[in-house]
Image 1 (tube, helix red, strand yellow):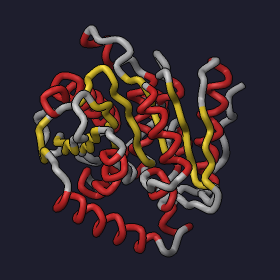
Image 2 (cartoon, helix red, strand yellow):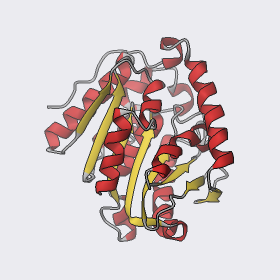
Image 3 (cartoon, rainbow, N blue to C red):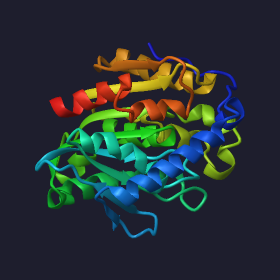
Image 4 (spheres, helix red, strand yellow):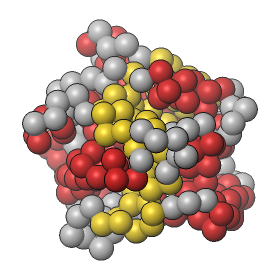
Length: 280
């Protein structure tokens, strides 16, 4: 049974989390430290747009599994360098991390942004072997808007377009946007410019073609109602389709601190994702 569309729900986490700037400062400073002190192949182009660039943080082990991470920011803000800190514990665990940027609204519409993420995935498959990664073990994760793009890659068989079906082995969306129709009436749509038809076409829950072997969907227990609705909608979708999914609700975490659990070596969410990747 699918989750019914709600009435207006809050989505503004900067209002809901007054200390959001502290998380932004932590992310910025820790990411700068990671880029200074970890091996990184930086700003590699995967497409023609100036923002179609990615950073590769290679694991020391040859043939390492690959985690492609997609930043959030309502498809309008941030870039790959904003969350470089995510790479550190995964690389330490023997997992190569690829962080991508993508074109932003209003310069690009959401359909073009989704296509850009697909190009990044295909680029990673074609080139990650040159950086010590295993192209047959690619996993995708993302936060907020990045969770939307990660699920788009996990539920649409992008690899089949290039004769590579089943390219995404696992998908780990964090506090994502999985049905874009409730976003139509929010302030964020001013730049996204979605109408009902485009919102439906850009909703991974309405356009699913496939399912990854491993799906872990996570959210902070203290997040606001809009994101909890999105989380429930994804779980209901998986139940209706018979898709195996692991649900992770992080107690006491908000929309920002849940990312920190995703990449803290002692965090429960990190442990689940690391185990899923290494087992795959």
